[in-house]
Amino acid sequence: MPKFYQLRIQDVKKEAQDSTSVAFDVPNDLYETFNYKAGQYLTLRFNINREDVRRSYSLCSSPVFEEPLRIGVKRVNGGLVSNHINDNLKVGDLVEVMPPDGRFYADTKKENYKTYYLFSAGSGITPILSILKTVLLTEKRSFVHMIYGNRSHDSIMFSTELEQLQNDYKDRFVLVQTLSRPKSKWSDLWTTSKDNSFRKGRVDTEAVEWFINEYPPYAQNAEYYICGPGTMIENTKKALKNIDVPDERIFIESFGGKDSKDTTEAFENAKLTAILNGETIQASIPKGKTILRTLIDAGKEPPYSCEGGVCSTCMCKLKTGKIHMKNNLALTDKEVEQGYILSCQSIPLTETIEVEYK
Image (cartoon, rainbow, N blue to C red; front, top):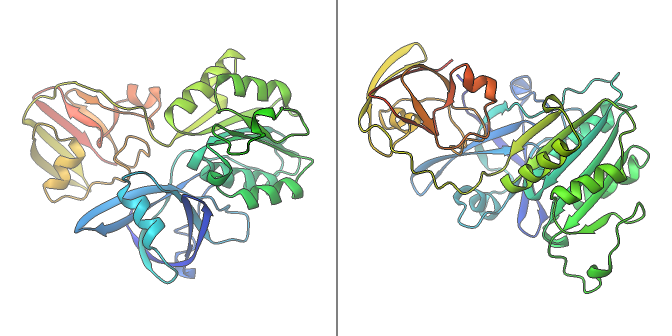
């Protein structure tokens, strides 16, 4: 069972008008524990207003660069933790951090000869930046084509670092940025060409199709990594399907799902049996509660992080009964067929439910 460790903040840096990055000092004895793959995330735990809250934030640092463990956090309207991080964290603070996790990562090898297409919008740049840096440094023969969407120049995260990477790897790295609400009066006159790294608009189906046509793969062994909000992901997937990109070459990390209007009725007071850390737990699932929240309210400590159906930390296997997942942006179709569920999103549809955590 993953546990939290206290890490000291080494650096806090303003990355954009509404975004901050936070770097952590990892002690030597925890170096292996916090080893990670490019694209993975950290889970942070805070006590805010006497409430225990957890959030997952992707690492924007690279495991092959000589740099500290760093996350990027974009301020969200009404976001309890994102606002706390942007407003209050400072160098020297201790933060409870769970070791890196996540299944969105690039399996980089120095002998690879690939073309990587990276699609991101907003704070979706964080794991994409980690993958970008790792590929460029590790795979000397691979190429990276990246499109990155934001509202305006003020909201571009890591702009200085991206510019430096363009200069350092100009023969292997192409970056096009799209701005949906550019503030320049002359921005309407922008044209898109290989001499212009900006495009007005969003990362939508049309932009993605244009981008791949404008920058075809150098190596036919191409992979496609997508990270951003739900609509951007759906539009990018649609564009890739239009050009017959196979599913096994597409890798997705969602930073927020679609607005849920799920009205599925749960079975009230269903009987839950959960096997957790070798213990068999019996509980009743109240109306409106998920399996995860039922276990937490019972004083247990099931694994969890985002509670948004995005990270898969709370995954368990359904042994008996039927459930409904309100949101699933983490499990594959095959995993669902095998009986795996996200307990943070699962409500009971039958009188008895049995799950097992690994």
